[in-house]
Length: 200
Image (cartoon, rainbow, N blue to C red; front, top):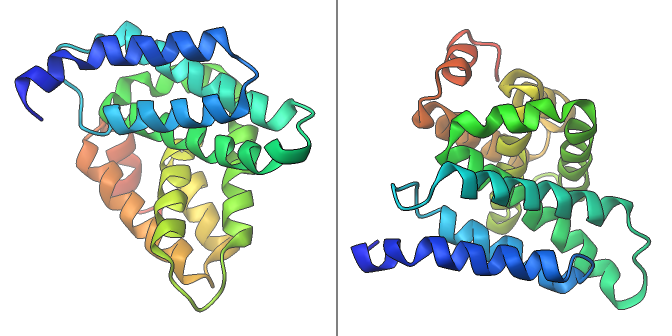
């Protein structure tokens, strides 16, 4: 990413966050906003993006995840609610992967946040077919596993998923990729748990 592009990241993030705040019940807008924020942040963390802004993005992601699960959404927007849930989880993973220290923000939200992330993972994993591998499904599973790992820990998130859906090739592939990615991020508590061999 060029220097000029990095300088433009904070105002872009701010603009998207403002749109989400102005239209908190627009499912399609929230879905695309989460996708946009993820795309920006997946380029990596850099000094121009402050931690306060990352925290704001994380709060927006968890609020979108809550809205997708709690709201009485019907008609045309039902499919968007499912996509919103997936994109909100992807945003959680993107934020924590570039700023592992923010995992404590999710941990403080306790069992409610963990339950929402677990339910989101279950929805994707249950739709996955046995005996086949689909790239887009594996990508989504990887985001869900990583997001849950920041709240429940990699043992519960990854090992638990393998125990439940280990017969599905896409789940196994996503679990392997997630383990590798979490190790690469170098967050000491996460790496220690992975090194103790309680995953896989």
